[in-house]
Length: 429
Image: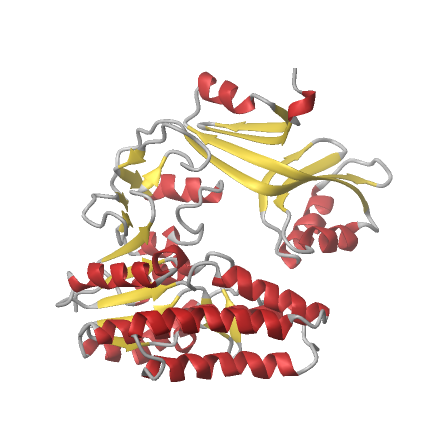
């Protein structure tokens, strides 16, 4: 059975016009078998995160914020279907009722658990709406709950896929649906535990979901549809004169995503690489464009490529007795890094110190610091940027260092990483 996997992000389904555009793209594949992985619409994930925070902190605004999320989806459906009696309203309302049940009770579980139960609703709703609209357009669309296929551990907000059972579920649940022909519409970002509790795969994890389905269903290709023409040498919102890469090797894509390039989720490439499944990054604005192909046999000859990670913190860690940072110390630190799910983007060590640059997300840095403070002293420098340049040259580095204080720098073969602080305009000379 020939199969393609398509992933559409939140920007591609953010409003009626964009949803209609997705249907226009899919009409060209009407005779093919597709698994269509869809993110939450527009800024829905951000809005549901605010609901989660309000509920957990008992601000009294959770219900009000949730109502805003509901009404924005109801307005979109009314415009899309032309009637508030369409069957999609019933299906979407049933999902929102689940949120109401959660919000009616006092928060007793961990924040991460609550987060996954509330924020996951965005993907469930967006896929119900898209599947219903595709059927309205006479396109064969079945709705699949991704939680029936993707099994994870019980680490909430960043579940780790249990591959053997996920493969069995894909064979048992997804393949029979595909054998009927047409499209299967499912959610990115979400999975479930053995207790059928919803988990999420990490922020922006819908790319990874598509790769999981591609791997388990032996797809001939996977395509990510974005609002850019393909993989670019830098973020066009931050830099002028960026160029599109027509081809990229798996190795280079893994390097770029590891160092913070936003075009693909970091975990996406490995499942595809394991089965040599090509990945295409294409534009939903210009669907006829060539895009970028990521595949195994691509010549590694690239211009400088820049990735910038904001919200970084530099942690300077030293032993309290000024003894050497030995192997046992590093082992203890890495155990706590793993336990707190810190995203380490750069590290250095000297005789008496260990320095890491991490993504400053939620309370993870605080929790990590608290866990090690008995043995180590920690100095934290927040609000930093991590700039990574692949295939660097002197001019590129000089341009990026302008108006920046470089706190630390690493050079590894073709890669330079710099942790920097921007100089305020009033203090620049």
